[in-house]
Amino acid sequence: MSGILLLLLSLSCLVATVPPPVPCRHCCDHLEPAEGSGAQPRSYAPEVRTYINMTILKGDKGDRGERGTPGKAGLEGPPGSIGPAGSKGSKGQAGLPGDPCKVQYSAFSVGRRKSLHSLDSYQTLVFDTVFVNLDDHFNMFKGTFICHIPGIYFFNVNIHTWNFKETYLHIMQNDTERAIVYAQPSDRSIMQSQSLMLELELSDEVWVRLYKRERENAIYSDDVDMYITFSGYLIKPSEERE
Ligand SMILES: *[C@@H]1O[C@H](CO)[C@@H](O)[C@H](O)[C@H]1NC(C)=O
Ligand SMILES: *[C@@H]1O[C@H](CO)[C@@H](O)[C@H](O)[C@H]1NC(C)=O
Image (cartoon, rainbow, N blue to C red; front, top):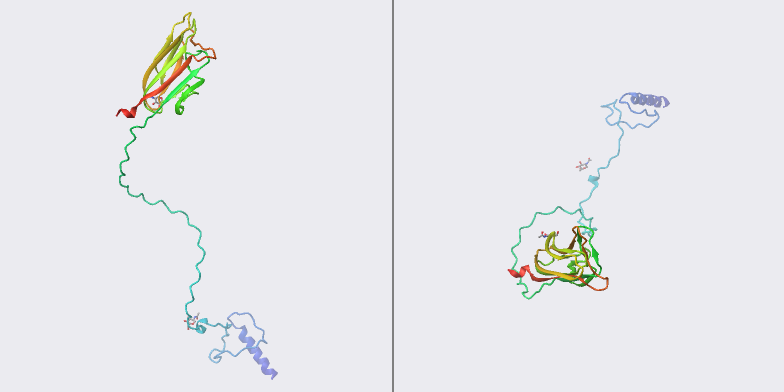
């Protein structure tokens, strides 16, 4: 009995040592007789893995389940590109006629209590007192009336001369002298004035400047009374004329 076992073991060891190269098995391991061992006595039985094909075990397909509740909304996507321009719309209807009774106003009247000696050849006359300044068309900081309503305007300047000194002023429209206020040096100081009408475009500026030549140029005032005034107002807006 032991001799047969020994023979079997040695045989199995012999079989095991024959290629293909596989890890050596212990001679005492139980060996299942290979299938068809008669036909292939020297082939080594490969390792058998149990594999269950689930497909075979599968039953019939079940009924369709009920529809689940809808999921949460996803994140907002990036904005799309701008679409092509649409076609031009049709022409609108004509508007209502304007109000023929609408009146446009522009008026200012300013004054100065301080006397003035001009130092430079040209010096802007600025004012320190406002009598009237509708819609702030007169810029007190610059000493300039700025036209907001194109049209015909009336302007007036009054000054008090200084005895033995010249008084020489320009009434300006932008950078152009339009009229002069002048008084020769004299032993008597007098009131002097100038008035004119000007046709103004939008943004035109009207202002007064002292013009100094070789002689001293001055305007008299006494800090108390009002001698120096500059006034202007719209007479007729341009739009009305058509
Ligand atoms: C499993 O079995 C099915 C049905 O017999 C067959 O069609 C399929 O090829 C098998 N799958 C594998 C991996 O063997
Ligand atoms: C006067 O000056 C203003 C401001 O610089 C300008 O807008 C306007 O066109 C000028 N007017 C003329 C007649 O040059």
